Image (cartoon, rainbow, N blue to C red):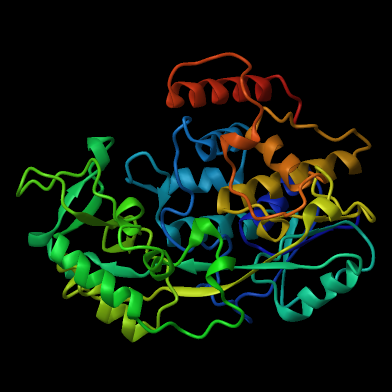
Length: 434
């Protein structure tokens, strides 16, 4: 049996390779790391995450929490590895990034039906079954090959940003405190309060700070879910106070009151030695990051172990090119998965890799595809990506807005979302997805 070729060993590619091999199909997983790296990658491991909280909420009242639970129930490799390397973060699924990525890599490399072929892929395979999961930072030669494959369409681009990391020991805990918002869950976040005067000075310098050169960058083109903090700041003096620096539900134990503004730090590894500046994605020059972010009182002596970076993300005009199984409409032997399809987020990428692999395996077995219903998060996401009625296609995180409403009233948003999740999991339990 000819192996299925999977291009890319990120979350989507790793999940797709695992699901195919688990079903008995040989896989050739092609990955260019470590010979060639992207601006977002720093290790040779598969399934590398940008920050510890990249997998986001783990609660069923949140759509991404539902998506994770669906994947768990269907035997996702990525969710199994994430759960095994969880670190405390309130209601979120945060992981020790290095432990997680090493685990994914070991599972993939040790599977007898998966052969890893290292090296850059510069062309789409001319025959055979292929899943392209090359990610939003697809190398230039492969990106050109994909463009040539879709002469009737075009790529779309947006920019993504990562936040800085600081060491725990360099945080001034006399100026900070541990707490979770409204005391929900365990107090895993370090909260760095600011007075109005401190915030005003910080905001002024943040707006004036020098940015790194990013070709083609415009404020209007920033994907809202990953907006650089300096871009957000320029939209108004109070914008940050209603965004990543909002103080609601966080009482400073020294004063008993909510501060004017609060910068939150989230644990980035299991040992709790490194913390992420929540919501501080940025493309400021590195010296400017050090200068401006050190104006936060608790970070006045912070040791930055990674500065924020900004890089290009590339995705397909998927509603015109792909079907609900992530197959290329004009040539179904080729599937795409991951953020290159326009799903935004690591969990969403995992889901697309899972679904593409399941459909391909069933097709190779001569079985009909699984039509995940729109009531499920997996199904809703695939239907969004393939919805031809969408004219201005933009990357999308999973959300309850793309899932059909209940059709009956449930009081309270959290109760309504919980009921949507209950309905989705019930639908999934009655589905033959194997």
